Image (cartoon, rainbow, N blue to C red; front, top):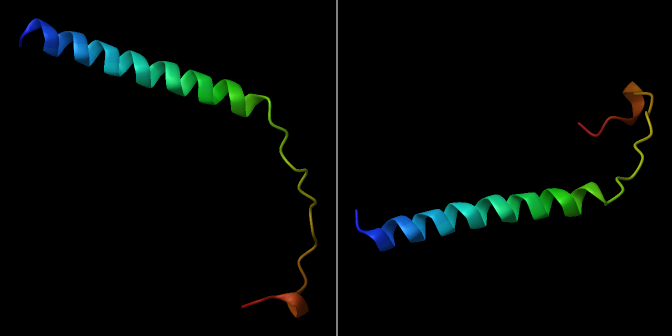
Length: 47
């Protein structure tokens, strides 16, 4: 491979890694809604 192929490949991989880290950082700050445990009744099934 030529040098510019290797440079583009390294930049591409580095961009994916940085993008995933930034996405992980932004999702760590979001608060998830609290899920309430519901009792399952046979009368209220949607099936």
